[in-house]
Length: 340
Image 1 (tube, rainbow, N blue to C red):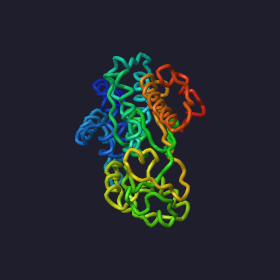
Image 2 (image 1 turned 45 degrees about the vertical axis):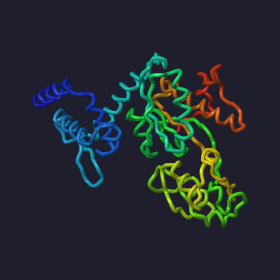
Image 3 (image 1 turned 135 degrees about the vertical axis):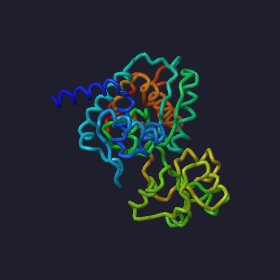
Image 4 (image 1 turned 180 degrees about the horizontal axis):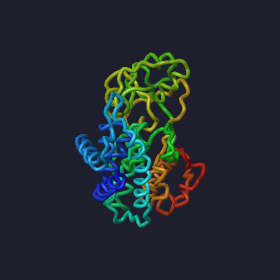
């Protein structure tokens, strides 16, 4: 008798349940933090707390307990979480699987993650390419940390990401966009400008390191560490344009992808040691592999990358239509796309 009363109570509550509360639960469970959940959901932290409070009332359980590790799920919440996540994924996939995407009339907002150097390479030509074909489409570009990309894609808060090939997450697929070699930039009047430099001279310079992350080795520093070397980082900064202006006014140096040299009017020095090329990768949610709108935006970025390769003397090695955009065969090439 008690079980029947309890079940009837739960079903009554369920009928009045707001689907957004379940999405909040799913994100809080995945992130383990109200602050990170609020960022993923693009709402305030008090709004997340309020949603959890409403869900607690509906389900009759505390759901999460705050401790030094963050938001720890109760045993009831831990048992419920897989079912909620699976249900939300099924709903999301069903809505996103529609094939009637028409860029000419769509008012969709795409959410994309790029750091500042990637934006400098891709965002301008992407918006130019969209302007004629999709005049009402918007792009919301933010930088998402690599360890958060999988969670954001799974939560439906991120459509695409451009980053280096360090993401190993089964929730995302990827394709190679572009490889870039590195060069060392100094001001044109720098004492070392215009000649070859030795490894000792390079390591003796003060360096500006461009990175969106607060800490951790960058691509160049990992290569140096593998060789048992370390350079002197005098400034770590996110914005490459500001970094270039500082280099232009000081004797500091910055080591960046080759294409920046011509754009900033700085003197380029050939590196006196080998550094592997920077391999830009395009990531998208595995569940959106066949989504028409996501596929459309992926093709735009892949086409931009292919044209940049052609400008540098490479070949357009991907199939394109008469307008220079990737055809449907593009994302079916095993060599170009693989699951992570």
